Image (cartoon, rainbow, N blue to C red; front, top):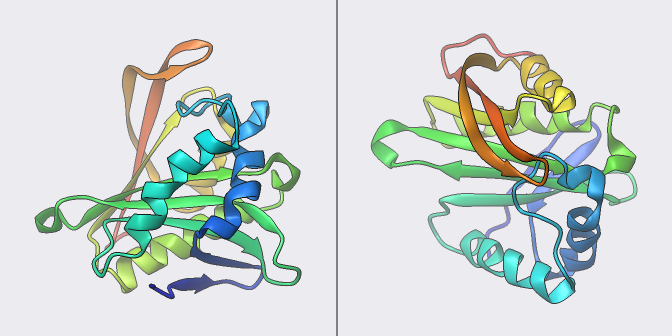
Length: 183
């Protein structure tokens, strides 16, 4: 089992396990966290288990291509959300990030703190050149997180996200290893 942890002042990002199933199911079942997410709300906990089973299997590989982290409070180990880092083809040294934060923890800086920590992990530990993220154009909270973390908006993809509300445009963001990083 890989014991990868990313620590900041307030949070710990660690690879998810089946012990996170109930917390992840609650997170995925919240309508407010589903609004800009294409995954959809699971019908039951078994559907959530089927979603996270390959994520957990991937986390156990000797060479991980898709990291899925639980974000937890360092003080009380309370579950805050999920964070993903999906590596692309090795030649291009790039990855894509995604995150889903429980609404109880919105507007408290946890997503930004997590993103900055994963950006540093990607550049310093994984020796990436580029980290990318996408975000629905109406997802103001996520846009703020990406920009506060030093990512630059590069463009807009038209009607690429199949959301409950219909097809959504997506802003594309990135940060390069040579870009100045926010503290």
